[in-house]
Every structure is written in C-alpha cells, then in structure tokens.
Length: 610
Image 1 (cartoon, one colour):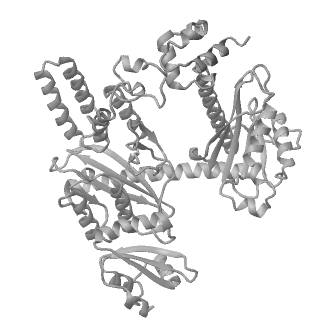
Image 2 (cartoon, one colour):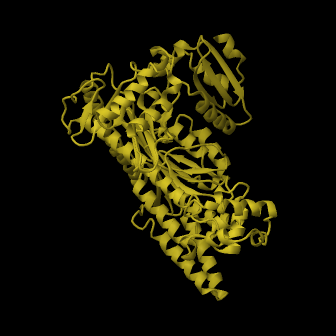
Image 3 (spheres, rainbow, N blue to C red):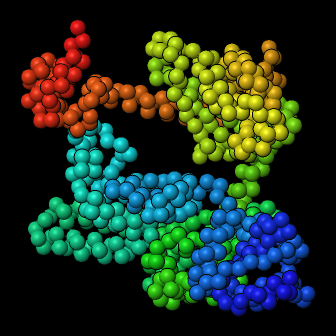
C-alpha cells in the first residue's frame, strides 16, 4: 500500500478505495490527495469503528485529479450518487418529504408538488424537501390564486380556454394566448418565492405597480397590489429574531439515535423563516459531522447561485469546512461564512433547529415502531416465514361494466410506495356496459402482472426487486379463487402468497380455506391490510373517474380516419356544432379550409353509413 500511496499526487482531486474484488468501498475528496490517503493508514490515526473496518478491506487506491477543490467536491458528489459506496454517508430518499418541481424544460413550465425527484431533464428545478407539507400546499394554492398560471395538466376544451382564463387564474396556455417568453416571466416570479427571495420579489412587484399606476393602468396595478399583499402574508408568523436581519443564512442541525438520523435545515431570509427542509440518513453511515457535511454538499449542488446564503450556521465543525466554504464562495460570487455558534441568539437558533430535528426523530421512531408491530402481527396471523417487506394490493373499479379498470398499490415495510403504483385497463371483450365480471378482471390483471414470473425458480423469484411477499385482493372467497386459479396455472402458487380481505366484516381468506382466518378487525395486522385495501380502492376509483371523464370529452370527430385535431378545430369553427357537420353535404364540407373532396366524402360517409 505504501508504494501505491507514493504514486498519488499531492493535488486536489477524488480518491477511490477498492477491495480485493474491485468493488468501491469509499469515495472521498481532498485538496491534497496524497496526505489524505496516507492518513488512513497511519498506525497512530484514531479511526471510528466503521472507518477502521473499511481500512482493513482496502486493497487498491485510485484517484482522479481536478484543477480545484470545488471541482473535486462536485465530482465526488456525482460519483457517490452513481456508485453508492457502502462506507460513504448516504442520504435516504424515503419519499416522506415533498418537493416543488418547476419544469423549465417545457415551453410552458408546470409547477407541482412531488415526492420523487426525477432527473430526466437537467433544466427542471426541484425545491425542497419541505418538512411542513401543509404550509407547502397552502403556499402553492395561494401562488396559483394570485399569479396567472396554467391550472390543469391538460386542456379542458380543444378549441377554447376554460373558466380559469375568464376569471384571470390562467393566461390561456392551452390555446397559446400567451407566448412562452411571457409565461416564463410569470413563472420566474413564482420561483423566487421558493428560492427564499421574497423581499427581492416584493421590491420588483412594487416597482411594476408604481409604473402601471403612472401609466394609468389601474386594473393591472390593482392585480400587482393583491400579489404583494398575498406574498407578505406568507411568512407573517415566522419572524426569527437575530442581530442582523439583512443577512441571508441557513441553520442546520441533526438529532440521532442508534438507527435513525434526522436532519433539518432552516432557511432564513431577511429575518424570516422561508423554508424548513428535512433529510434522513442511517446513523451507522457516519459521524454527525460527516453527515452534516454530506447534507450541505448535496443540497447546495442542486440550488441556483442566488439561493446560496451569506452565512451557514452548523451544529458541529465540519470535516472539510474550507473546501465547502471556498466552493460556495465561488458559486455565489462572494464570501460565504460557515460558523459553529457558541453563544447568544445564533446558538439558540441552532438549538431550535436541533429540537425540531429531535421531534421529527421521535415521530419517525413512533411510526417505525407502529409499522413493525403491524408487520409482526400480520406475519404471525398469516404464518409467514418472515416479515412481509413488499405487500401488493389489487382492486377493480367500474360502473355496471363501463370503463373497467384495476389498481395495483405497493406498501414497502408497511409504508405506501406510490412510485411503484400501477393501474390497468381491463381488456376482456366480454366485459361491457351491463356485463361486469370482477372475478375475470382480477384474474386478467394478476396474469398480466406476473406473466414475466413464469418458469422462474423460487430462488430466482426471491432475487427480483419487485417480488411481493404478500398479495392482497379486495374481495371474498370468489375473487380469491379466480386469482388463485390463474396463478396456479402459471406455476406461481407456491411461492406467491395470496389472500383476500372482505369488506363486510374485515375477514381474511386464504386459498382453499372455506372459513376466514381467526382475527379481530382492530388488531395491527388487520389494520395494515385495511390500509392497503383502502389505498387500492382509492387509486382504482380515481383512475376510473379519469377514464370516465376522458370518455365524456371524446368527440365523434376523433373517430373519422384522416381527420386530425387541426381539421377538427376548423370544422367546429365553421359549423359550430357536430349536429351541423352531420347535416352538411359534401360540397358544404369542402368550403372549410383544408377539407378536400376525399376527406369531405370520408366525413359524410361516417355520419351517413347507409
């Protein structure tokens, strides 16, 4: 190892620790690579038990030299995300906290709340994760009320804007009544709220209001006045008393036990708390100092330069304060101070953040304990060999056979994993309006879900990431029998464990058993199954409503071959209704721009099949 260390240059860069099999154990950064790597193998070095274990396994050291410490920091963060080394601090993304997403990659950006960061487009921007979900939703509702933004993911009508345009809530995005450039200007103002730049936005709006008033545009000035009033009301009860309210600052602290580490970051701008972000990490993944360092690095890598504060208050001294400080200073364009406050109001602020992190830790432990009790009770109730890690629930929704759909929901360790939810449209041609068949529908859905599982051994199945430990069907013995029959024909029972939960008495049925499992509706395991059942029902009903609404908006013109959306708009603009189009002759149809004789004949024949 000494020979390898001698080849490492004493320059800024990133180093990799590999074991004898070539797997990456740890990725680190330093402004002096050789000195940092050598420090791991010094006999006098007092390592933590985790790092000492890592050092014992190191067989090879590799490195990448960078020009600056800032480049090393950014490279290290990207490599950690890519390789997920076991001995690095890895933040947990358990979808507990939501983000605000602005899709700058689209001509007309959308603004919505999500619990999953999809990095499909580099230009899209995520703000968060926010701890106070209620306040976040309240803020988004207010933003959509006072700023003219697109209110729907899809247009309600094809040829005209909806009521939101008439009342000033939407600028007519669906009909292109506002240019993408002008719409971006509106969204940029909204983004400033989630960037914590409300004071800057208020100054900007005040100037625009005065200009509009001077130009006698009083209606426009009144709208801007209402926007200013609404923005001022956002943080009215969140004043933070500090010696200097003009400095933007973040304060970060954590609370931990032997299993969980909860981190909170308070964003304070102009003396107001504008954001409270939350993060999770495994306690065993590192020291409190290294966890705080990792959170700050990952958080500031994702923000714009204008969002970097002038001062960061930290609970403990960071292992690499100088690298983080220099990198943030370069990103912001001016000095950024990183301080461990020891007394007076700043220290009290850190204690406040730590106390909030402690409350979140207690909530996390309480929910984890409740889930564990429910999983243990369910495993005992159903005689499972181990705790059910992945539970899948299925339900059917329709109205007398119309628009039949199914839902698949997934619970991981007793918690909904919404990113794994799926819905299905029932394809069985025998199921039509007035002719429903829930048994056949469930059998179809389960066969589609598990058709790729056929001919796999139990060992192969257990290695699959989406292999369920338990499948729950919403229904009684009939639904369970139809599902069991199709899965047996696919040679999947065993190993798949399938049960059903009947609504009337919350009874649990097992395949081949005429009587339900002995249980009480209020015991933890049954309550967990009820949560799965209710979530499957909610998800199925929501999708069924979407399909009904979509069908109700379906135009008969869409069924005419060769008649695209643009020609449909021209026909409706000319004739004003489908009834007039139906009565029109081929010659009259040809009067519409772009409708030739062949297409006119096609339209006429569609409405006059005889």
